[in-house]
Length: 222
Image (cartoon, rainbow, N blue to C red; front, top):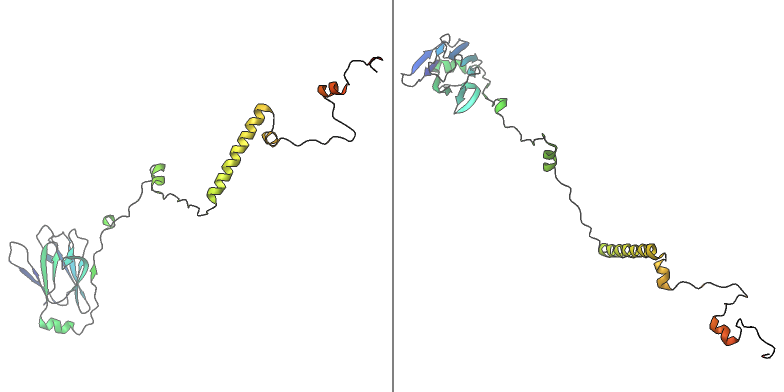
């Protein structure tokens, strides 16, 4: 008959035997289990051993401390002759006789072994940026980068625009103060053409030199 040896601290290892045809063996701290473990690390209904094709499998029943194989938490453990597992903190050894090994060798065994996954609330959570304040979002948003122009003509263009702006400002300021357009003053203006037959009126000096003043001419002077 298969044998399970329970090694609780401070007590003599206790063997439990059962028939090979037994389909289910319950293990836990509760008195209604087939194998009772008194240690506090065991849950009331901790785990069970199930007869499957070709052998046995131990399955956890959602216990607090679980079952382990080589210190690895498991949901299901394939049991072979000499397999040692931890039920809570208690070592449990599974053994088979030669006749039982011979009987099981004629059956096809499929592995049921499965590791225990961590609880969802203990799984690592991705870090998130708090959006409680609108400033928090903008503080972590990548700022756009300005690409600098590599054109060699840009400084010259800027210089020309500055000169035009300065010239325009001076012209408007002069026009506002004097009513004259500054460029025409600087360039001396353009002389206007006179109609045919029209001559410039003589100046006063020219009239005196030419004897064409306003005084009347007497006969004696003629």
